[in-house]
Amino acid sequence: MLPVHAQEGSISVSAQAAVVINADNGQVLYAKNAENQQAMASTTKIMTALLTLEEAAKENKIVTISEQVAAVEGSSMYLNAGDRLSLRDLAIGMLTVSGNDAAYGAAVAIGGSEEEFAKLMNARAKELGMEHTNFVTASGLDADAHYSTALDMAKLGAAAIENEDFLAICSKTQSTATFVNPPRTQSYSNHNKLLKLYQGCIGIKTGFTKKAGRCLVSAAERDGVRLVAVTLNAPDDWNDHIKLFDYGFSQLSSIRMDESNTTFTVDVVGGISDQIEVTGSDGGSVVVSAADKDKVERIVLLPNFTYAPFPQGTQLGKISYQLNGEEIGSVPLVTTTAVEQQTVEQGIFQKIGDFFRNLFG
Image (cartoon, rainbow, N blue to C red; front, top):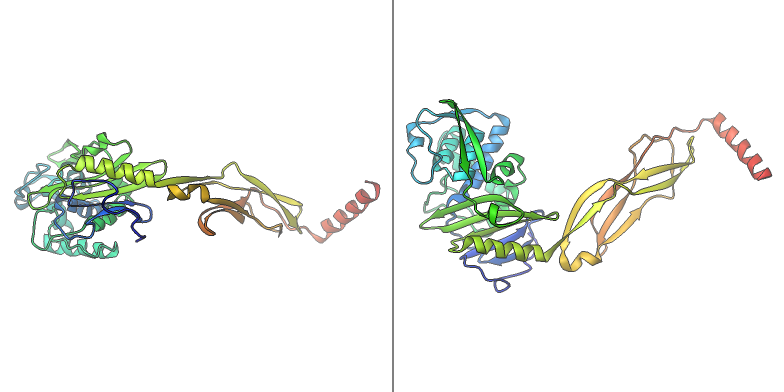
C-alpha cells in the first residue's frame, strides 16, 4: 500500500470511517479512521458475490432453494422454497436488491454451510491483504466477530470489479434473473443510487444494519482513472461518496500511451532488406498524480541496427514512459514485416551492385 496523500481535514464527510483509493495500485488518496474495525453490513456481499461468480465461472450449477434459505430475514430477492436458479442469478440478487436469502443460499450451495463458506471468505480476505477483517455471515447480518475496515473493504472492492461478471452486474441499474423452476424471469433494480447520481459510477454495493449504520462501497471511472470509495456508518453516504470521488479525481491524471500511429525504421545487417519498419500499439493508460503529469517523459528506446533473420512482430525496442527516471509504463515497438537472412550469393551480388553504384554515382 502506497503512502496516504491526504488525511482527515482535506474534505469533510459524515462517515465514521472513510477512504478513497486508486483502484489500479491501491494508493490511498484520502482516509478517515480507515483502519478502524467496525461492522460493514451488506457490503459483505461483495465477497459473497465475488466467490459465487468465481464458482459459477467453473460450474454455474443450479441451486434448489430450501425452506431455511427462503426464510432468511432482512433484505430479500424473494426466493421461495423449491425455486431453482443458477449461482450467477443468486449473485444478481445479492448485488441489486441485497438479497440475504440469495447470499445464504449461495453460501450453503458452495460451502455446504454458512460456517464453511465463511472460511472461504476469510481465506480470500487474507489473499487480498485484508488484515483487519473477519467474516462470519455471508449476508452481512450482524455478528460479534463480523467486522472489517474501510481500507480493507476498498481492497475488496478493487479486486471485485476486476471480475468481469461482477462488474457487469453491479454497474447496471437493473438486472434480470432467470429461474429454472418455476420458469420465469424477474427484474431487480439496483439499490445503489450513486449509479445515477455520479457520472462514471460503475458500482458497487450498499449496506445497512442498526449496528453498522449506512455503509457503501462504490467505484467510479473517468478518463482512465478508476477509484474505489468506502464509507462506514455514514448518515449522508451519497454526498460523502460524491465528495470522495471529486477529491480523488482531482488528485490523479491519466497519461494515454497510444502509439498505434508511431513508426520508426531500423537498419538491418545480413538481411535481404537494409531497413525494417517498427510500429507501436495502443498501450492503454498509466495513472500519475496530477502534480506529476507534466514531469512524465516519453523516451524511445531502439537499437541503431539489428541482425537478420527475424519474423514479423519481433520486438526490437519500446517507448518508455518515465517519471523521475523510473519507468511507469511502456509500449513495445515491433516489426511490421519479416526479414530473411541474406544468402552468400545475394551478398556477393549486392556488393558488386554497391561497387558500381559508388563508382558511377
